Amino acid sequence: MTDFLERRAIISGIGQSKIGRRLGRSAVDLTVEAGLAAIADAGLTRDDIDGLATYPGGGMGGEAFAGPTSPEVQDAMRLKLNWHDGGGEGPGQIRAVFAACLAVAAGLARHVLVYRTVTESTAQGSGGRQGIGGAVSGGGRIPRFSGSFQWMLPFGAVSAANWLALVATRRMHEFGLRRDQLAWIALNGRANAARNPIAVYRDPMTLDDYMAVRMVTTPLCLYDCDAPCDGSTAVVVSHADYAPDAPNPACHVNAIGTALRGRPSWDQFDDMTTMAARDAAASMWKRTDLRPADVDTAQLYDGFSIITMVWLEELGFCGKGESGAFVDGGRSIALDGPLALNTSGGQLSAGRLHGFGLLHEACVQLRGQGGERQIPRQPEVAVVANGGGPIAGSMLLTRGAG
Amino acid sequence: MSEAASASDPETTTGTALGRGPAIRVLPRLDGANRFFWTSGAQGVLRFLRCERCRRYVHPPAPLCPYCEDGQGRLEPEAVSGRGRLHSFTVNYQQWIPDDGPYVVGLVTIDEQDDVRLMTNIVDCAAAELEAEMPVEVTFEQHEDVWLPLFRPAGGRAGAAAGEPAGGSR
Ligand SMILES: [Zn+2]
Image (cartoon, rainbow over all chains, first blue to last red; front, side):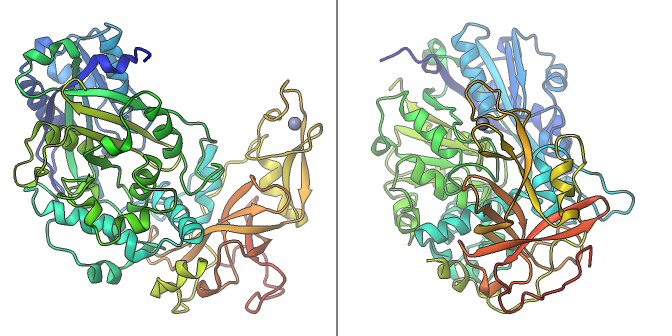
């Protein structure tokens, strides 16, 4: 098999800041807390870190969404870097991890600190979630939009909730998906969150609760939308030859999925029932001998529940259009089921750490450090997927050098 | 199949009064590339760029035809029928603007070419009547120098008020 360079990378360290609603702390403060935790977890010191990467940084979508820039974090931690990277365009939030893997494989850096930080809960305050375009009702002149937003915002399609609701309605039309099936993504997340002491929402949720809660944008209800929170997740991506020296079991990168072959657009993508997950997943499976049946745990993006359904199908855990039946009743995706899904509670219940919380949890489970929520049969292979709509990236991780 | 989309959702069957769109319209910034599209409603027609050579419609506007291999297919705005099919839809209840009422966001495929879609609002249609693949037709709503293409059920279904004044009624 071709020498796929991402295999030269491992995740040697993981760390998180305090996570919660309205912590009122700055993004750089949370990032340094997570970063120091990840570096110590990797058995390293700040002097060992010679690479830094983030998604997105640079103010994209507002500071509370973007997190601190990489120069800000470099300076706060006084890092001396051989390689650095930040940006919002690429195969999902996890693109920063992909970039770090390739940097260590290329010898540009040996230990790369990668972080994703959000302070959306504090920024949101007591008001509701905002749409793109922000507080247009705040008086004064309403700004006009160019680029892709001009095709959506005039019609009040101001949030990914609206855009992904179109995916959900189309899936109902083509595949007969029902709300009481979709519900199991939220219900599974909540059941797992009850075992996760730092999850944002841990109260039990029933199917009746789900069916009765208010609609956000049909067919997506409140419990189909993730829970904004404050927090930072950091990982250390190291060269695989560091694995024997790492104090915790190394999580080996087996393959990454980066393709985007359909039109990169929320409205013009050729297949509205899959969008970019189709291409990212297909490209990942071309880079490995592992098959979907080898995967023990799936940490799949759940910014909105419907995205998780798409990933389940496109990654090959069930047939196209069959995710409704697959998740129905929750047994196939439960902690003790054949494909333990979003075992921390996911973004729906543990909090919207924007993709990196799922990556962190994959590592926790592969290491066997899940505590009360550890998958009973020690997982050997995990898949992580980030993004939805026209943005998607996926990654296979193994316990041991697979 | 599409009944599953609405029948499983009690809120879309209660006949909640739907607005024609958000209470405040965020508008596009007009420029040389998009002005023809956003002002075409002044003549009561919908226009898209079309390649003079391969005859395909191209949307959003592009500098040259992306389908002609040599990149030399010239694009000119051309009127279409204004008819299409509702590829998907959502009834938005979230109050992105305080106290805003529910409205329908639709994704419409034009009849002339099945890979050209518009995000829009579906108007003059009760929530319970919404159905994927239903035929729809364009109607325009003017805001300042922009004519937003909205869509309603084709062929004047009940509830499609004829002679509804065009223009920002909200
Ligand atoms: Zn052409």
